[in-house]
Length: 466
Ligand SMILES: Cc1cc2nc3c(=O)[nH]c(=O)nc-3n(C[C@H](O)[C@H](O)[C@H](O)COP(=O)(O)OP(=O)(O)OC[C@H]3O[C@@H](n4cnc5c(N)ncnc54)[C@H](O)[C@@H]3O)c2cc1C
Image (tube, rainbow, N blue to C red; front, side, top):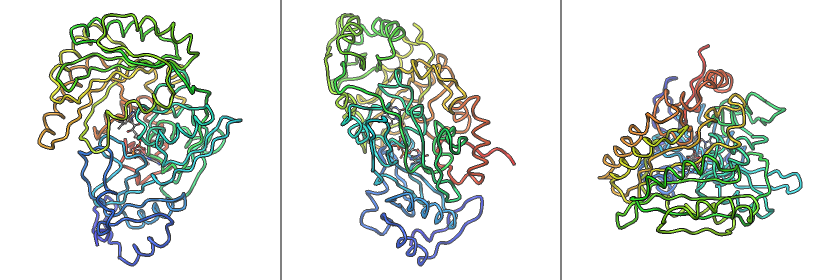
């Protein structure tokens, strides 16, 4: 059987006899899927259809106990481990060839305490499920823009979205995490328990163990907020982008302004801004007024909408199974030359589905000190990334090359920093760019909690030398 295959690793290779696989299968409450099983083809898929890997085993954990069993089994068999929650990592780091995928996507319990404004959420929830459960009480915390994304990967790498400028990153709203470390022990990390680990999980990704549940601080949000979008033809895009820069630069924390260069199915290109105001509706009308009145847009739609609707508004752009590639970097400003460069490189996009995105950050994110959590790029104003989206594997090279070329062209305007959650498999230097001055502390923490680098299919921080 596949799981008996030899897997080469630094520590040597070990065969796993079929009997021990059977024993393991019986001691987990969830499901173990092997290549011979009917559900294997579906189970090995992740969000990005360009990823095609064949793990030796997929363990759908039902509870924290299953996670412990899976970690112990993988460690004793010397298997490579991938950890999967929402399966959204763009480079497919949550699935591997030959090794074991420890999947938490069926762990979806959530308890909301509306009085204390706290939610305890298991790691398998996606953003849509989390938002629905918390909005049932008129509450929310920062989550991303695509409801199919997992809360786990998003939180562990930072997490920004429409609420971040007002309420901080998702990881800034983390109160506690329950985490299984490489030795198979379950810990609780919070401001008063395992404080070093608590520091590490607020941005340090999956480096220190497998988080089984998160506890978040919630805020009153909605249920109705003011939101909408406006699109300008490419001929007006240069001026509209300059206006966007000035308008977003003066935006209050309640206002989040993402923007993108986009292409219609006809091939016509546009600059589009989406605005979301989470304060009082009447005040929002005044704040957004200037944007509504600017230029001669081809489309302009604003009005009160349910927060939950906004949180799913981008879902259609990023369906599971299409082919995706992106390369991101933070910008500290949007100069005239940067704008001209973006307009010129986007014009050559080989696929009508591809985008050049500016996701606005700043606000409350920037007011926290850089050493408070591993997430260091707090002074950035925009996360800028070309997103290649296509379907035919024959077009892989063309689309990947375009995104890389765009990234290179924009690089002179970058802060040099990158968001860990938007990294692909880009090497150690880029991981260092995600963590900057916090990198040495992460290495020390890695040495303490994962000295053999058992959890290494991630934005990997190497353990500090002994
Ligand atoms: C369409 C789309 C939209 C996005 N929008 C946003 C956005 O608006 N804001 C934003 O901040 N990010 C956004 N992202 C990036 C997103 O935060 C990352 O892709 C994130 O890793 C997704 O989490 P996941 O659980 O789905 O990932 P997975 O692919 O399941 O996991 C990614 C990595 O996270 C780690 N991991 C996952 N689960 C666990 C766990 N339980 N314990 C320990 N480690 C774990 C592992 O290292 C794994 O390799 C977006 C991504 C996509 C694809």
